[in-house]
Image 1 (tube, rainbow, N blue to C red):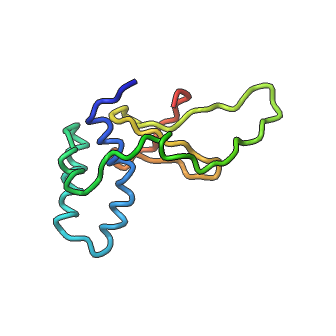
Image 2: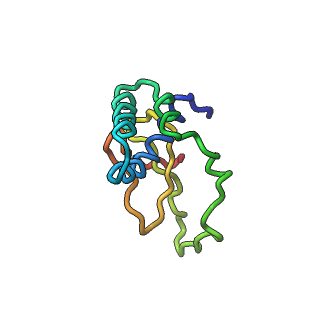
Image 3: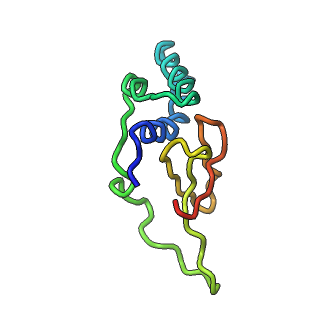
Length: 124
């Protein structure tokens, strides 16, 4: 499935938003804070946000498979006849292509744009 450019940009922005908010708590300029706020408003209205990402220096990075995995081995097999449910967490409104994989001890991933928990999808 090929994603639309707007969906890719929204996925990148959604994933970067917590880090941006952390940076904005510090000595960030008011101009940069305004750009983040404008991007967030545009994203919530369903408008293109690529121009804001460019101004923030954020771009679509390598595909997840190109980034490499931090896991060196697969988890052990379960002692059950049924296999584990495999999938990922996706945008709760389906407006972007973000897919997060969650470790057992990690918090539930959230969509910072729509301020909701990501939705689990067995296809993810």
